[in-house]
Image (cartoon, rainbow, N blue to C red; front, side, top):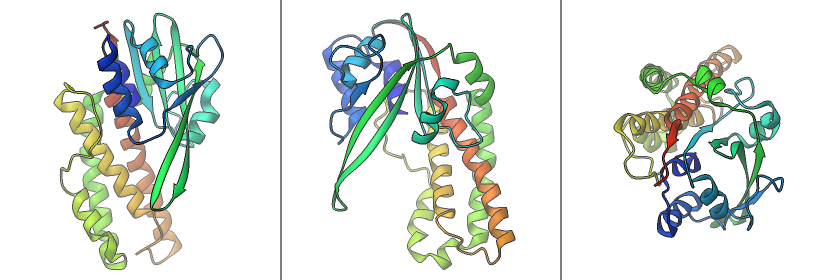
Length: 252
């Protein structure tokens, strides 16, 4: 998701590119890039790809697909993007592309590292199908507010803190407006940031509530909870996607 934002905001010159790469890679090992020779820049590293994409007008978006909700994914990358759980779509004067990350952990539980490879493919124009699926940012913000109320009420009804005392601090954080701490580009408008924060909180609630069956005392309750939380997660994933969509970014 961060790559989609930085594709939009990185400008010309080595220093803006350096800041963008530092934000996307974080503590990872340097990201490499794979794909056909006609879409993979010379060098095969993420800075080469980002520099190529950011050299003129461009469109970009991040997708967080899940089984049964592919969110307008181009068919050619359906399987790989579903397996990864995310992808970045980009259109430049050179064409439309999809980048799917493959993340491998290494090291010990005390010091975990990540090796990331982006597989880049040429895809058909994606903007129309994507916007028809995820809707507008304003729609996403409205849907998220309703979903957040439902999700926190469900969490309270399940009494997660009682059957998982270690979750109490996490629940308190989810009910606050804490910044998730992403390395976002400067200058993002307030609505996009609000949607990002709300969607991140919702996905964290879903992860917390689906960790085990917890307070569900029978299969029917467990099934009802799973169905409700899938809808919450669906709204959150689509909102995160809508927050990344920006078009026709001029060359800096």
